[in-house]
Length: 280
Image (tube, rainbow, N blue to C red):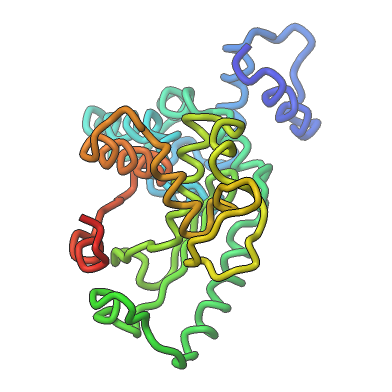
């Protein structure tokens, strides 16, 4: 049964006025259709047709983005409807059902405010206010231990967040690429755990703090790096990924995996930073 427990949980949240009649269709398709109707009337607010831009605006208010990979089918359907229909970008109930049917459970959760952050707009208003306050702080200096980093513009300031439910928000200079540096360590660790398993990975790297600087090349009492977040541990973790492949194949695999983790958003690689750091 497709997300059976989740659907039942959502259906129990319906107000009494939307309760199901005794002889109604209890099949999965019937249940999904009723969810689609509920979603349509929630967004339509009494209108017979919904402008697509009204749907996307309401969607973003929940924290979901139109670029969300989970909504690929839904957004593709809507774009096709716009091209093929003479409705001028308006969706009636039937067209709306066709567009959202493949994502109805996710969308119902979003519009019924059942995500980890129910009122995402209120939450992001606080984030934006903190962002503006922090923007006034001009102390400190950009990192200079790599020449390429020393060229960074200190006036660039951006914040992006993504919740466990995929609610996303960005403010500031978030479209300008920057080098992750050591922030990639938890990501490569996640790749190794996902592809090799926790037990195998931790045969070669520990789980406890070292008490030393992150760049100290030291081993614990078992003769392995203390954890994946210090440089020694990160080097070991990286070496475990696709051990049977050459460097080019490993590079492509990691970059594609990171791209997938980022929801197919832009992921790049700084040749200049890597070269100047001595990674050849």
